[in-house]
Image: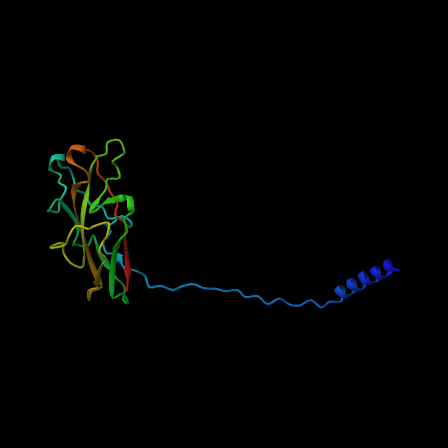
Length: 191
């Protein structure tokens, strides 16, 4: 009798599921994106991609100082680093984003130091101006870099100027001559 009741119960369950109505499932496809205004572009073809190359040339190790006062070489102030901005961009902001291990205070460290032929204890001090010249501009303190912001001129342009000099990142007695190279990433934002 128990077996018949169990069999009958099982048959009723199967019968109920066979006759159960299939319910539709409601779902959603969410689509999102963003339309942006093109940013400013370099006016002149002298810029290779988005890398600005500032060549300092050769100097004697004995002439390299911990705190140089003069700029040894510059790039900018002409069409090679002028930004041309489309209508709708009122100002440009430049923020430096060096990696934590790429500087020591205001000295940008040599990425070639551990390579064969790389100089030891020597890096670079850097100045940058946006929409102005380098007169009165301080060396960049990479541990707390200043964000520079300037309005776009009436002709839709913003000049960028960079200057640099060799600087000791260690004592002169611990330094050696060789190749010196560094990268300073920066981000341009538009408002």
